Length: 266
Length: 103
Image (tube, rainbow over all chains, first blue to last red; front, top):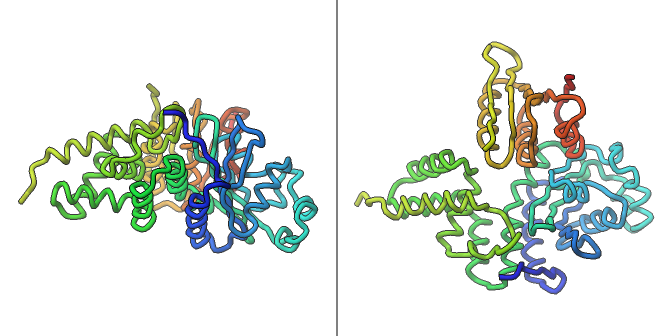
């Protein structure tokens, strides 16, 4: 299977999905004046594209891509979350300032001046491409800003996979479930169904499997939901999305095999 | 195979508690690292993590450290100029945790 290609601007369904995710991020970060999802692909020219935006998020990332530099660029280049508690006193990006942003986009001058903190987290999309979730705040950013963004990484990867697979209902339904109830709740439900056990037993079962396999619980949960849903486990051929990774899928497969073989208590 | 250790400093009355890490921290053992940090931080308002014996860590470790910094007052002890010191600077972790450089 060839590596999936992705054209966001042609695919309004995907932008819709990503923008709905950004709505949720906005609820968790009420101080955000801009949010964006951008794709940074070193093998393409231009090397970056804004896929979805809320507030001034798109303009903020476009300015960074145009040479001003900033958290989103560093997050994609170094593959680490990047936090700037107070952006305008940060010495990492000397070209990024209220003045340089205003010069590009005079209509938002008051917004640029009111910016305080910023944060960006990367997620691997393909071998040479990174999808970055960025936030720019009207208040100082702190470590919890980063942890909030990290909490949405898998959802965004899932949305990207949905776009790439272009096949519709099954993955979209799964994503809706992940959005509304959370992967762990869903996986817990699956374990309860298989074992006909209560929520506490299902929960400790998942935790034990996570501990034994050394795979994070939420990664294991996503892998398990994917496995049971039957998609899109085979989708990444070469250098495609890594979340959940091989170890997580193996652990999920093992757990599911054990659950399917377990005698039911009724 | 990485040989990493997450050792809580032996004296439990030490304040703040010190978690001494050696080896590598990556996706394979970050869960163990997180558990060790939570254990070290239990009931303490501040935690010190000694990373001077860490040869390599990846973004999984940075994420875990941000998560720890969100809930406690975090101090990181690092060697002078190295991969980890660079990573702390790029990510901005050095702005939400106290970084102590030890040669």
